[in-house]
Every structure is written in structure tokens, then in C-alpha cells.
Length: 183
Image (cartoon, rainbow, N blue to C red; front, side, top):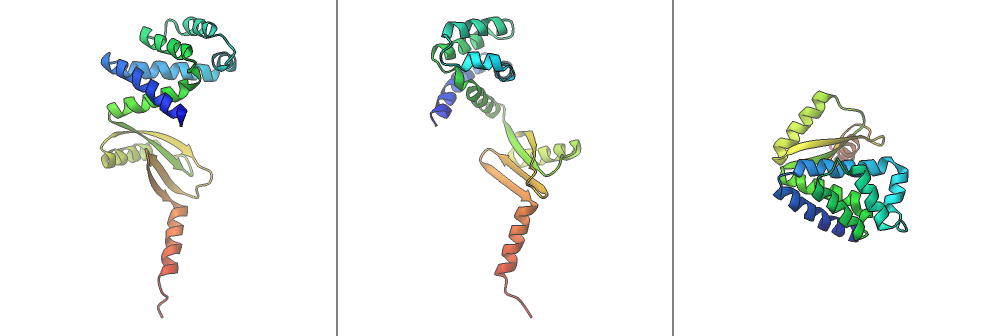
């Protein structure tokens, strides 16, 4: 819980600066790139997240690796995280930033779970329908769920749309059990 509150606080701070500078997309790309780069290189992750590595070594590393790829205020933000010993929250901060930026851009992320891969046409139709229902532009994040027999489960924020075969079978069973038998 503390990490989420902390991540939201820092994400809100960089979001406000990015919004003032009309750089929501650019900052999102930069934060995402930094998080992905650190995640892809185990040695870099060990250096950045290890509590015994001096802050100056971490700051020098950020400056060397990302010097030409980050706007100055984004780089300064990362250096501030290091000074405050909050670098381990970077991935959560970036995730919260994307959520805030998407809210401002009227974009909602939908997690889609299916039993098998959907075609491009099916994905486009699903995104269009969800967009009509929510009134927002929808970005789909698809996952193949091995435990689904069939159908689809969609999660948008705290809303869940369960169109799975398992749920439909449960509903049918419940309906059959509650209806009296007729002769």
C-alpha cells in the first residue's frame, strides 16, 4: 500500500510537469524506455536497485546511459528518485504515470483474456464495442488464458465483463437448479 501511495505521489508530480509542457506522450515513452532498459539488463537492475550501491554511482549510470535520450526534467526526476532512495519504485511510478496520462487523453486500457488468440478483425470489433460502451478510446492488452474453456473475459479498471463459457455454464446450472421440474 505504501508503495502504491508513493508511486502515485511521484507519478502525479512528473505528470503535472509533463502536462504543463504538453509532453505527456514523450514523457511516457521516456519513462517506459528507462524501466524496460533496466528490466532487460540484470546487471543494470542490480546496480540500480541494490541498497548498498552509492547514490552517486547510480546517478552517474543514469547520466551515461540515458544522457541523449531523456529530456532534462525527466533525467532530473530520475536523479531525484535516487537522491530520495525511491528508485525501486520506478516501475510502479511509470505505471501510475501511464494511467494518469491515459485518463487525461480519455484512453482506457482493457485487459482481455481469451482461450485462443483473436484475429485482428475480432480485436478491432472488440475495441470498437468497448469504446462505444465506455465512451473512451480503448487500448487492448490481450492474454491467452489456458484455464478458459472458451469465451472472453474483459477487465477495464475495476469493471469485469465475464463472457466465459465457464460462467455461462454456472449460470445455466443455477437456472436449472432453481426452476421446478414441470411434468
